[in-house]
Amino acid sequence: MRLLTTTVDSAKILVMSKSKDQTRFVRQMTLGQFDRLFPDEQSCWTYLLLRRWPDGPHCPRCDNTKVYESTARPWHWQCKKCGKDNRSPYRFSLKTKTIFEETKMPLRSWFKALHLMLTSKKGISALQIHRMFGTGSYRSAWYMCMRLRAGMKDPDFRKLMGIVEVDETYIGGKDRNRHWSKKSRQQRDAAGPQKLGESIGFGKVGVIGAIERKGSVVCKMIGEADARTLAGFVHHTVNEKVSLVATDDNRAYDYIDRRIRHESVNHSQREYVRGEIHTNNIESFWALLKRGIVGTYHNVSKKYLPLYLAEFQFRYNNRSNPDIFGEAVRGC
Image (cartoon, rainbow, N blue to C red; front, top):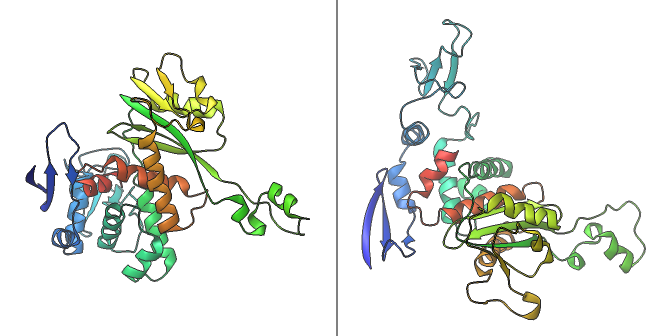
């Protein structure tokens, strides 16, 4: 094992690797390295500029490269191509069309919150960010975290290849452990007469995922776990030339495209591994996701669950990326 030292935008990150063919452990940027890389607000603006426009400023509306820097306002430019006329150009800033647009929070606070989210294996809650940063209200910290999660969505999606594992899971507590007002109708009817004015609760939320062995993971929230939904997810996320799709014994996966080699393990018969056929990798990702929800966030609503899935998916897919922070800023 040899110790390599790489420099990513002036931040030294230690990378330990055995060989090119084996999985390498990447140590992310520490808090000390973060403070040296971003000592003030000016350095954060410069870093965002280099990440967003490495070839120079572009107009976010028409992608014009011939823009003019504003002399009165720093980090602002003017585009005459998509303006009304030469005397009324389109004015934009470095934050325009980004998650940082129209924010009053310093850019360095956004960067530090992003760094904490990326270096926390099971995530960090908005309440913890609120305690550490001393934001004016919990709502401000929550808004910041949700916007950062929205920026972690992967725009460069490619279909999975090699050996792919597909499985579904369900997020939420057991119905029998819920408060009376949140139980399903079946549980309440079994327990006794329904109280007047109480609302009908919701069950668990389904999530389906596919993972490429030693590669990326793709997951999304689903409404119904029927054959059309599960087989359709496989069709949209897995390449037809995949060598194997491994699932459990859910009969809905029998409707996967016949051109794809599909094998399953029978969990109901306590069969978990048969040669290269298993779903251990995707189940490990589900364990990571659920430990984050139970231990860090405690509760995740159905409305915002896709944003949390994007966060865990981004962090997992960039686990071997020494510049995961720069990749996240580029997507913002």
